[in-house]
Amino acid sequence: MNEETANSKKQSSLYAGRWVALVRGRVIAQGGTPEQALRASLSSRYKEKPEIIFMSLPFELPPLINTIREILPPEQEIYLVGGAVRDLLTSRLSPDFDFALPSNGISLARKVANALGADFLPLDDERDTGRIVLTNEDGTRTFLDFATYRGATLEEDLRARDFTINALAYNLHDNTILDPLDGAKDLRAKIIRACSSTAMSDDPVRILRAVRQAAAFGFTIDKPTREWMKEAADQLGRISPERLRDEIFKILQGPKADASIRALEMLGVLSHLMPELVKMKGVEQSLPHIHDVWTHTLSVLDYLDQVISGLRVGYEADKTNDMFTGLLGLRLGRFREQIARHFAQPLNIDRSHRALLFFAALYHDVCKPDTKTIDETGRIRFFDHDMQGAEVAAERARSFNLSNDEVERIHAIVKHHMRIHFFGTRLLNDKQTPSRKAIYRFFRDSGKAGIDLILLGLADLRGTSANELTLETWTAYLDVARILLENYWERPEEVVAPPRLIDGHELMKELSLSPGPVIGQLLESIRENQAAGKIESREQALSFARAEIAKGCTGDT
Image (cartoon, rainbow, N blue to C red; front, side, top):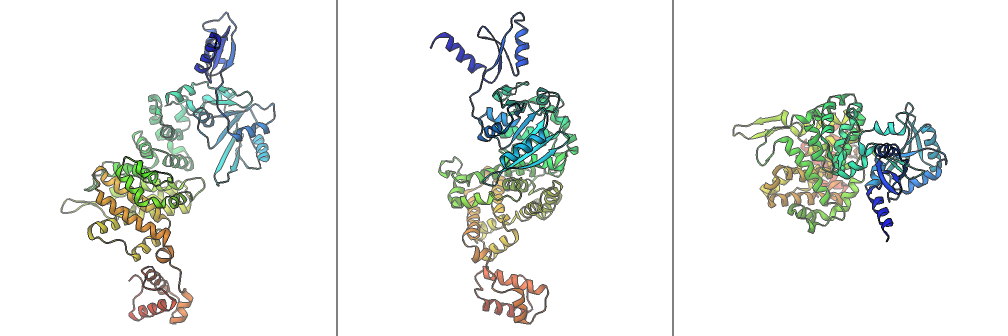
């Protein structure tokens, strides 16, 4: 290799992804745009006319982008912008793609949608933005947004964005990148930096986005940006509940949800977003709790992530350094695929099941501050905090316009989260495992939320005692979890949902009963005793019902 070739390769590596000014083959200046490179060169070599070129980056475009490029008119000026470009530069696959163009965003989006056979909707008439929705084979969706420049030029558009790492544009025609704010440099330095001092006040939802992206990428938020976030926190009230909800659920779906929520609290955001959570700070608890309510809640989020990760398909329990996670996998590992399917069934296509569970975990002790009492021995108690907390969590869920199914699931998780602890304590103290009737009642009351309750219960236990947790207690809880999961997935017709042996009409006919609440009570008592193994046939069900009527006893027995 000659010296000239070696120098050329060195320059290509050093300035990859940048625009450079060349004089006689040597780089004399560089910048994020051609104009920046030219200005930089003229400041030192103003008498010479440099050649401005882009130093290419070696990466492959997703097949979808190449398909769109083939659909577009040859003369169409268009750029892939924002997070999708950021992800290309960091070898990530973006789930969504944003395109910027000088005009006709809606009409071009409609044309591309027709060519792809995809769904189309005009997203924002004022900003001339159209959206394409592609439904993938696995049921997930990919969104393609086509928007006209927010400003007179593309550079104005980029400078008006949230963070420098998202103020990037990729030219679909000549494969060059425009980076006017040195976003690529911040990417390499792992820094979240606002595009301007007004970025947060222009759109306060960016406060949540900064925290989310810092956690997702393992980046830090620079100090000026953090200060601007604090200053704009009180403006979150002018943001629609839906936009706030979407960012919160993305935070809860992503990594380090506990650290992200802690960061929002430290930035003064939670008091404007979910003020009921702030009351948990500093509320003391008696042993075995080693944290106050707020620190405990954050700890539960962390341990919930560990529990779910420890039970994911492909996780190797024998390679973990954490003894409790290892035991988790050994005792419950056979349910990995069922748990994966459970989380693969969201209650809303736009929000994950995992994020919903984390939302419930965030609220599971929300009413402890309101229910705190101290008995004559000095022990702190929180009677009915689960019941009251369920109402508060559901109300917040409704304020974020979650679906009815999501609200009901959150309500059920918070309301019943103490039942796992009842089972665990009884096994520890009385050596009694959950009875068949107790298992039936647990899943009757919680339904599919029962799986969420089991996982949350394990995380709640670890968040209660942390390093003080004993293997005896952990093993007892794992035994309870195993018994419940076995019955739910391996013996559903025996215990969890026994088939009906008789219906209400037959019961009224056979026992000459009139319609009324007693019919439902009898049917439920029959099913409970089926679950307990005491009733196995229609005849036994009728005999049981006759005996109950004769005793004048209905309802729970």
